[in-house]
Amino acid sequence: MNTTTADRTESDGATSSTETTTGESDERTNAAWREYSFAGDPVLSVADLNVWYDDDHALKDISIDIPEKSVTALIGPSGCGKSTFLRCLNRMNDRIKSCRVEGSVAFNGQDIYADGTNLVELRKRIGMVFQHPNPFPKSIRDNVAYAPRKHGDLDRGLVPRLLGREETEKENELVERCLRDAALWSEVEGRLDDNALGLSGGQQQRLCIARCLAVDPEIILMDEPASALDPIATAKIEDLIEDLAEEYTVVIVTHNMQQAARISDQTAVFLTGGELVEYGDTDQVFENPRSQRVEDYITGKFG
Ligand SMILES: Nc1ncnc2c1ncn2[C@@H]1O[C@H](COP(=O)(O)OP(=O)(O)OP(=O)(O)O)[C@@H](O)[C@H]1O
Image (cartoon, rainbow, N blue to C red):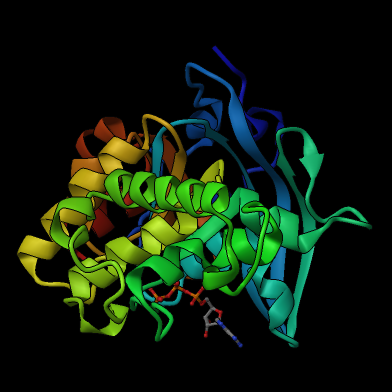
C-alpha cells in the first residue's frame, strides 16, 4: 500500500473552517480522507497545487496521488475547478495567458513543471480527450495516423502515398489496433478512407480516443467525454473507459455522479472555491462520505 501525497500534507485548510448547507460546522470533515491509500503505484503525484486566473484563485492547495491503471473521477459543482485541475496534469493551462500555476505535478516521479520539460513529449504521454469530439476534417485513417506520422513514430511522412510497403503495413496495423482498442473497428473497417466528420457523435468521440491512443500514452485525461452524447453512445464510452483502465490510467471530469459511481475506482470531490474536499475509493465516497458537505452535494442538497 502507498502513502499518498495527501498524507504528507499537514494543513487541512479545505475542512477546518467548513460549514454545511445548514450552517453547522462540518464535524465529519477532518483530515481522515488525506490518509487515503491505495494498492499499486501513483503515476501522478500532485503537491500543493494552486492555480490563479489573474487574481481569481481557482484551485487551492491541492495535494493528491493518482494510482496507475485505474479510473479516477473528478466531480463537483460547476466552476469548482475540475477542468482547471485536469488541464494542470498535462500543462494545457500553459495555453491560457491569464493562468498561473504553483506547486508540483510529478509524473512517474518527474515534475512536469520543471524547467526544460518537453511539452510535446509530455502531451504524448498524457493525452487528452475533450467534451466535444474534435476529429480533423480528414479520413478516419488519417485521424489515427496523423500524430504518429507527424512525430515520426511511423518512419515516414505526412503524405501517405509516399509510404513504402513496409511502412504502409505498419501504419495499417497501428490504425487497426487503435480503432480496435477504442471499440470502433467493427463499425468503420470498411470505410477507413471516409471523412471522419461523417461519423456519429459517439463514433467521433471514440475516434478521438483512438487518435489519442496512437501516440502510446500512459495517461488519458478526459473532460466530460460523454456529455454531448446520447445514452447509447454514452454507455459505449463508459464501457470503453473501463476497458482502457486495464492498460492506461484514466482521469475523467464528469458532471454525472452516476457515471462517476459506475466507472471510477477513485473519486475526488471538488467544491466551490477550488477546494479538494474528499478523495477516496468511489464506493466510500458515494456510500459513506467523510465530509458533510460532500454528502450534501451527492444527495443533491446543493450543487
Ligand atoms: N480560461 C479562463 N480564464 C479565466 N477564468 C477561468 C478560465 N477557465 C476557468 N476559469 C475560472 O476558473 C474557475 C474554475 O473553472 P473550471 O472550468 O475549472 O471549473 P469546472 O469545475 O470545470 O466547471 P464546469 O463544471 O462548469 O466545467 C471558474 O471560476 C472559472 O470561471
